[in-house]
Length: 89
Image 1 (cartoon, helix red, strand yellow):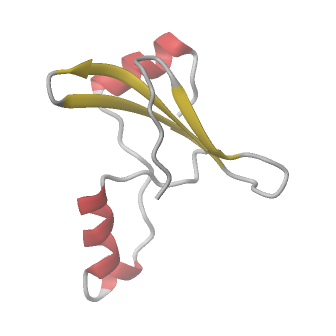
Image 2: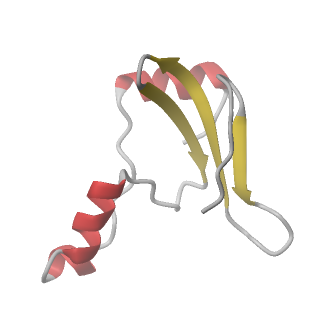
């Protein structure tokens, strides 16, 4: 596991280089108490899930495990962050 330290508003980029078509950018948006708010920027066809959701999708029996992962659903807060930063979903 690679461990990196980041301050608020700093980012980490995964992929997006010559050998990797896809790119994921993770930005620390806020740090309060014991919680860190992260922002994710990825190609629209790259699913982004919390680990517990990903595990459910990939371990569920039957059609749930084989179904196409739906387009991400963004909360109002995520929509505002995306719009204010000029990011695309």
